[in-house]
Length: 431
Image 1: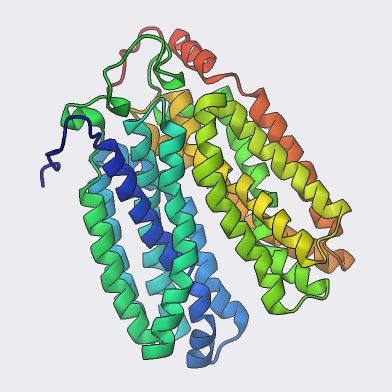
Image 2: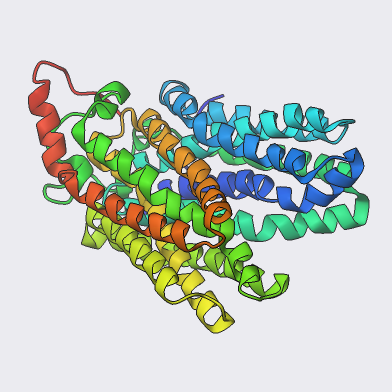
């Protein structure tokens, strides 16, 4: 299938269509994945299994969509985002339809976990990495809007799933979701052109002008995935990714249980998680675009430093009342949302866009490690000492180390020029 042609006023930039398509892909993928909680009780009752067996459904899904980015990223560089999103649409459609017919919990592992996990992996990295190719000066803004789809999906997905389950049962709910997810991801993927050059355009919709290119346009060639991951700057940023996501996912996973332990009922405690979700939207849409003005590496370090400060605040000023829990959650979520939006922009700034999908895919495995370690750390240390204080302290210290790791990475302009000097005989890579 040929790339969509642009029939629009001259001043309209097709890159914003790509952003909208990426937003849709992430809304659907994470809306499906994060709606799993609404199916928890129906699956447990249907198959007569314990909570651990049902929880494994979601754990396997998360492990797949974080870990497989290292595979789907390079595939996107080779075949383009439309092919990968088409595959994701098929995976959502088939996996959810098969899950609706499951007769044992292990069949849900092989259908929902496997297919949805692979579907998110085949759509998330391709979508977020493609946006990086379409923008330079407004890269943080575009990335923030695109990944806001994750937040919207997290907000709208569970209520819609609950309505379908209540009205028609979980099996029919999976079938309806299968059809909707397959169609929406396929359509959004079709609109996602690989790069501006494919349509005869330039990033940001403007011809390159001296002094306006930003970090990604700095002197130096685009590096391959292998060259990127072997670089000093990638090592520091990867370390920061792992260390920073541990406190972030600790907060996301345990804030409700922490608040309940402080005496709040479930409805009140859940507002801690809701406030983090609201804050993440603020971070993605309002704070991350400031990176285009302040510098994306500097802004990235700031988001991690704020996470460290807020985690220390959690330790010294316990969140035992709603008046403290909700504002803290909004601030914490804002730092998290900005961090998520800025993460892919740094890969493009440091290593160029020719192989950016593969580089982002490998980079996101660090988030996979953090998402596994953070919740686990909270549970293990709580069991050991009978409170969350030690876990929170460790998480805060890790966030400080993450901030230092970001600051140890050289500025993108210096890194790209250095990469050029390291391989002077290589020819420039095309976008």
